Image 1 (spheres, rainbow, N blue to C red):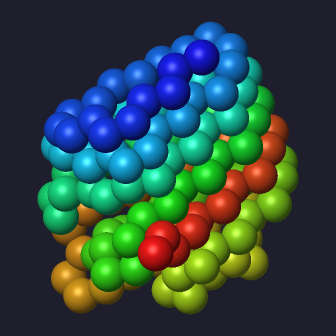
Image 2 (image 1 turned 180 degrees about the horizontal axis):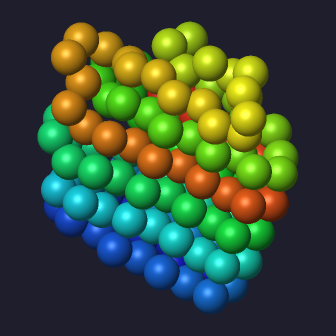
Length: 125
């Protein structure tokens, strides 16, 4: 399945099955990555404004962002664990949904969802 390195700009990736990996990426505007059956691995940055969606129906979602990123997070781990390196995003789900603002005056929106699988929101180097 897709293994993309060094992409810069708006991205819309969809897969029926298999892992989607984006590394050294810099997303902009309204970007989305989704798969019906498989994992999503994102390691990169996001523009300070825009909407970024990472969704897997059945699979884990790992999102790694730089530690100085400002964003609003909305996370839905319907059936699975959730872990966050960002303390502003509560790692104890209440009713299956987790939300939090990271950084000063976040304008970017990051939505992460999986129906069956774990979610990890990581701080990069």
